[in-house]
Length: 259
Image (cartoon, rainbow, N blue to C red; front, top):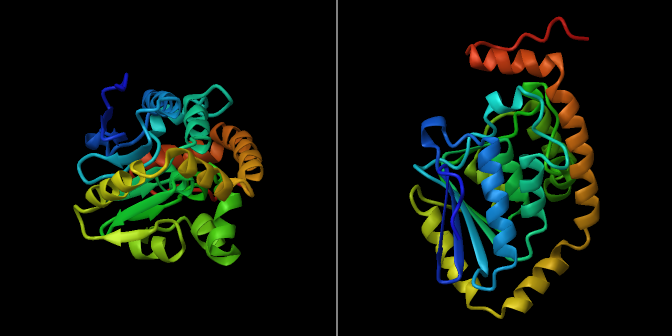
């Protein structure tokens, strides 16, 4: 099972598929082609009996700095047929265990995709952030529904409205990740858990995952769709254009002229 994109690497070993985001020169920022490749790998793995567990990780001690804003300035990043949405659906509906091994920056969807993994291991140098409001955008990937339920309304409001960075221990404390390990150890720990899961009864594992998620599945899916509709509108907004331009020009965004 090979990726069709050079910036997404994949390998299967011992019934475990590892998917690696490999664009370190851009801090593993995600492009449309990279989303398409990950969606294709997950969809293929869902129906492949030789794969029982998936590990998601990033190369060079970086998980992902989030979306490549150049792609998103075109305003075509959302919608039912967009690569981003297809990836979201592929991971959200994936029937087998997914383990994330997180190091370095995990920004935007780099944080919110963890809400759809079954286990997440973070290195102690990992830095998380959901800067959607800072970019003139809104929450995505069901985060406005899931975050208040796993950490409470007050903390979810703090992380989504202020968009500040937070460390790995905070991520563990608010239930975004399961465990914090030393730098350089997340992938090894993920492989240990993956090997253990790959030896368990596969149907029992899949059924347990399904039962764990059934109470939130439909509501989460509806929220993802609603967020995506708003997100698409926000990508066409002057607020986002100002924020993205400011980011590229390495200056603070100026929202003073907006009502």
